[in-house]
Amino acid sequence: MVLEKYSIGIGDRFGRQGRAQLAAVMKAKEAGIEIVPVWNKSHREHTIIGTLPADVRKEADDAVRLLAWDGSYYVDADHIGLKNVDLFIEASDFFTLDIAESIGQAGNDDEIRAFVDKNKKYAGSVSIPGIDEVFEVTEENIKSIGSKYLKAVKEAGEIYRHIEAAKGADNFITEVSMDETDQPQSPVEMLFILAAVAEERIPAQTIAPKFSGRFNKGVDYVGDIDGFAKEFEQDVAVVKFAVKEFGLPDNLKLSVHSGSDKFSIYGPMNKVLKKFDAGLHIKTAGTTWLEELIGLAAAGGDGLEIAREVYGGAVERFDELCGPYATVIDIDKDALPTPQVVNGWSGTEYADALRHDQSCPKYDPNFRQLLHVGYKVAAQMGQRYLEALEKYEDVIAANVTANIYQRHIRSVFM
Image (cartoon, rainbow, N blue to C red; front, side, top):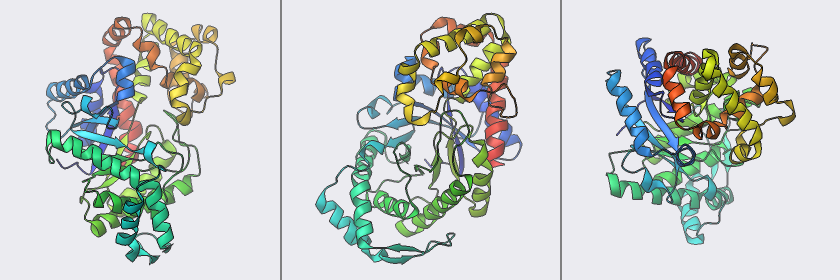
């Protein structure tokens, strides 16, 4: 399998918005932009919701059949490792190998020495086309990078070969993910990480680095936009160089995780993609679930009542819900409206507070972030929540499609 130039990871917590998500991709195609959809769901999300990877496959297949989509599409085993990859083998054809936990762990001394010996030819001044800066590299730098990343890349190789043995080499797409770690990778680190990926014979088609700044769930980028733009451009240049230098797949491209709603950096990303004629994979994560809540609130009646209850439950279980996402949310708990206040809101007021429209004075990023991680409350409503999604399908679907197409696809790719 060869992943196309542009692709978008479309998370769907409850598996009911596949058609609405695909409709956004189809609108892009009508506008002349070819983007392939990748339905993604992590093991953590499956555990919380009570779904299985086969459910994601069914959602994707059903959406494609019902909308007569004739393009490629994929199902991503999102952020998997050796402990849980087997659960995804049959249903998935895209595997995000998460090696963040192994970054910084001490590797084998002999392997590190061999890594330095193989790459010491790059010691000295390193120039990469597309980057004005010349990087000074020493053998000690290479050793340090090997010590920090080699064990993690070796682990990715082990996961890859496990999948390959089960599915066959040409029957799935591989992504290497390093984004859920503390520090961003420098251009020099990226270069030698990709050297290690090539040496490990991992045919990675996307790589997800850690970028500077905050990529909080469901809200805009927080950080130095110019600094991000430079970092993103340098990473694109490094990937392009590494493909030729190390014999990696020609279509290798960057993947941006927690990429949903990072409106302030979409423009700089768009410029870089056009400058280098580069591909991109971007994941929209849980914004579809928030569009469901917006639709339920706007519908009024029992839909609004469910939306209010979800918020009340999220406030009550704040620590439980926020704990697993502590590194990717920034919520001022004291600034949150009380459930009593929210229970007095109209559907429009609730939707205005939740919808990511920074020009709206009612928009509340604290409210939005808490609800982003509050999907467990809705999951525990069981059939009541799912039946509400069916009842108000039309208004919810319109929100989902508009969110992906207008706010994401148009800004990033067009």
